Image (cartoon, rainbow, N blue to C red; front, side, top):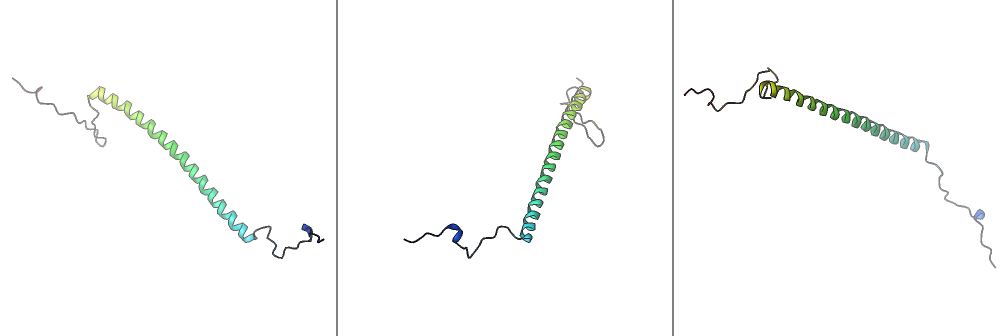
Length: 99
């Protein structure tokens, strides 16, 4: 009867490496680090974007309040924002006509 060889008795002529080379490890670490930095940067940008969007919404609400004041005071919100000139809506002419 033939004996089967034990695992310890088998010699692997092509052993597999247990670790990557130091150069390869450094490359992997550098790329992963770069990706992590970029993802963190995206997160900071998204946080800043959310803040800006909230600020725009608040400013639009404030503009609405000012427009209501202008409508109440002048009957229009059509104002040249460069000069402050009020652009009143054109009347149909009936109010100024004399009979």
